[in-house]
Image (cartoon, rainbow over all chains, first blue to last red):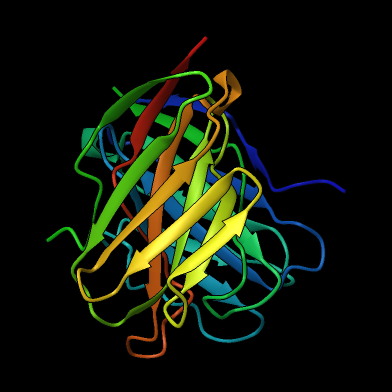
Length: 115
Length: 115
């Protein structure tokens, strides 16, 4: 079946502009995660959605970052007033369930470059 | 404060030999550990995992060993193949405040298997 898809694959934006990144999880997966990988770093947790529960936003680095998940499926990560330090690969993942024992399936990522 | 550490940024081995990738963690609440493999321009893919109640898990050419007292785990690949060349991420999760879905990643080790 189809895996996790993300769009766009690459995004170049000017400092101060807003960007939206999209994630389509695997059909039927109830949990959705956003991570980012900055150059030379590991993946950093950003936000987690599980069903209709309130999302865990504890990893969002500032209030310029927000995310939503509509209809329990597609998710959009929005970064307002982008800064150069926001440049990174943003990865989305989904899993069947919410506990740590469920494998997270990752999309190919969106490479964001802020100039 | 890096809770999952992969101290070797790169490793080079000959085809057919054993590859050993190491990972250390500091958070004693971690109880589930995973290895992900990542090719360029692709998202990480799950490789193998181990629960803290075990000290070894094997899947084909891949074996993960966990030493809880040392807070150390390792991934053994034998025999290594050129197609194994990729970045390997160690990740951990734990029931800390109920957020056992949140993966904490190391920075990765680039494995190169030479023909």
